Length: 68
View 1: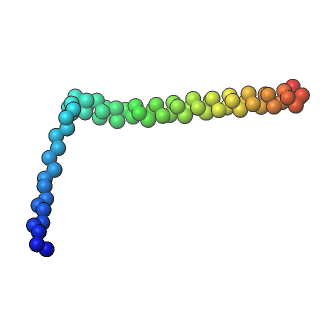
View 2: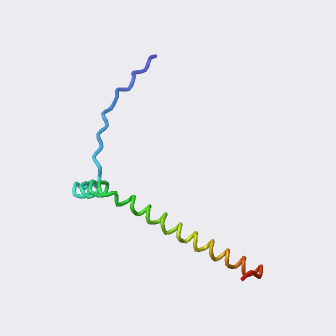
View 3: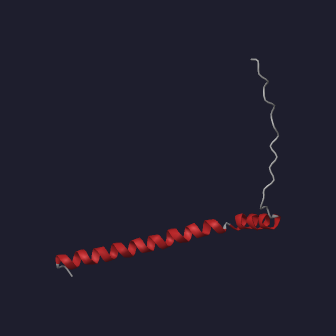
């Protein structure tokens, strides 16, 4: 009640390491969706790897049971 209310301050921030040239590169990357393509390749490779591991496990299971 007896104290002054603080005034709102205007937020003024200037980034230290801002390069306008890099900003254009980021826009191009977003348009081409380069980041998303990397994730898709990882998923594809991991599914192939998973199938290969399952086939090896199946082979050893059949080998130990004497079917092969």
